[in-house]
Length: 112
Image 1 (cartoon, rainbow, N blue to C red):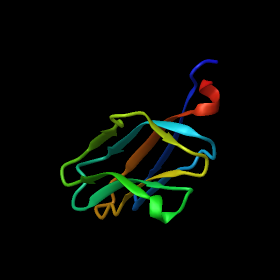
Image 2 (tube, helix red, strand yellow):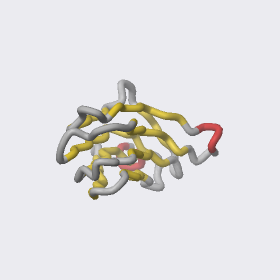
Image 3 (cartoon, rainbow, N blue to C red):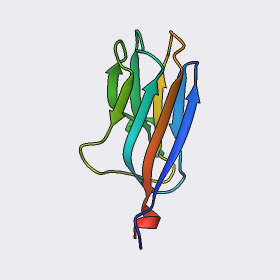
């Protein structure tokens, strides 16, 4: 079966609380973030909210946003997530930058 990639996008000007929750097994291909201007203070986190419970939640990357306008997160390894796992992008966005977040992922059922 062909490899089908999907994406979900979120945008806004307040705090970023973007969540990818495809409800199927999936691979995370990348996360793209664009800001209207350099971010300012604060740490953005990309993390896993595990369906297995809080004991399995992990931070994939923390990123100081002081001078960031564009952030592209591509995992070094293929990351498999189970149905119910969520990927979260969280940042206070104290300077109210307009943002766009895009999650790019592959549903595993569509690959095999």
